[in-house]
Image (tube, rainbow, N blue to C red; front, side, top):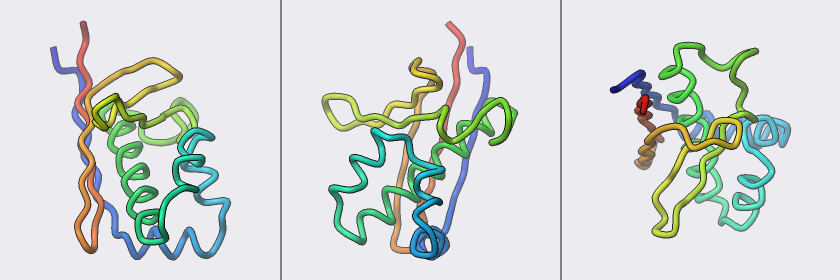
Amino acid sequence: MITGIGLDITELDRIRRLDEKSPKFRERVLTERELAEYDLLSANRKTEFLAGRFAAKEAFAKARGTGIGKSCSFQDIEIRKDGNGKPEIYFRELETGLVSITHTKEYAAAQVLLQST
């Protein structure tokens, strides 16, 4: 049964500006594992990666119905790739839902679907 659906879209320029202004932004949004992956990317790809993770985490929090806050922080949510490169979403180390992330020249968007077993 579907228990939640979340969608988020963000402007790449907005994320780029926030990231250039302060590395604390990326450190707040990305987990240590995600930061290690981020550090290996080219400048353009870094913005796409950060914006995609930001959108996915916002979409997850919306699907939960809580938003980002006390009960669900950016650090509680991690996006990992499976063996085929497909993104998977983990909440406090447990795989919790389905996620799709996409990018265009100007935007990153993500959709999250939560299901009960």
